[in-house]
Image 1 (cartoon, rainbow, N blue to C red):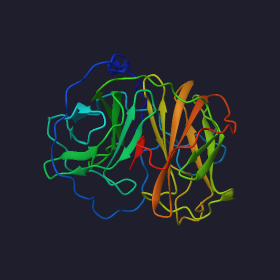
Image 2: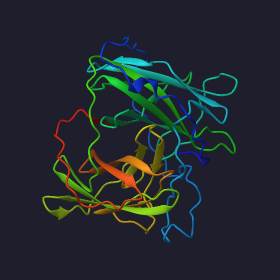
Image 3: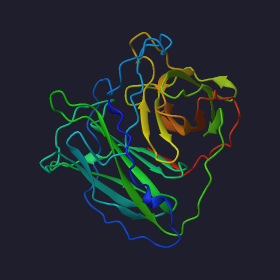
Image 4: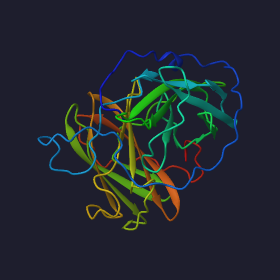
Length: 320
């Protein structure tokens, strides 16, 4: 989430022909668990629009990002541009400054120095990952992508430099193998994931703030004891269909500040950068496990509680 909207005509070349094989990705550094978490901080959100925000405190969605590989003097250097579908591979990258040096100092935001999102261009496969940084500034994380095709990698971070703004840089990733296109799920207001039902109330409005309320239940009963995950009761990522413009918005209020409760409802304030179809990915934690609920919405249209197919317990489409 960065402060300025710089939508460019970034080429989506990998979305076309994947009928045959790509090259095989190369393995790199070993992964180590991230150190102890820090406090929940602001995440580069834009200032609230008091006229349109409806009085909601908390986080306002910044304009979309992720369409550029370089911005603000920083570049995403993806060292593993190709992997093989269905096989575990080490994804490696670095963030480089204007002098070409790998960045080794970051601000911790939502308990991590960097958040990595990997999404297929058809928006069916989604990963929210937290890679490990080596002393030389190289980030790495093992991934296993279930299907061949084009993917987009998003690095969401803030350099530890005075006055630095939060940035989301994006780069293309190819998964080799036999490609079969899949259609994006139809707009929906209710999804089932791992025995939970998540209902979305509200919708996205182009250029204006709107409230999204997500209600979590299980076995017909509201879940009132959601657990904090990365310093919040829920995390929401929105990706625009077509160019995968990226929004990362956090709930109104934080655990422990008196303005929010641990479920069953998680409230967000978001602004869509334009009209169009978006995929929303909600991460929430309960009983020690993180779950991802997915929704398809059209900006400018309120979501109705239409039920979507349940996800299998062992799905490979999402990962943490």
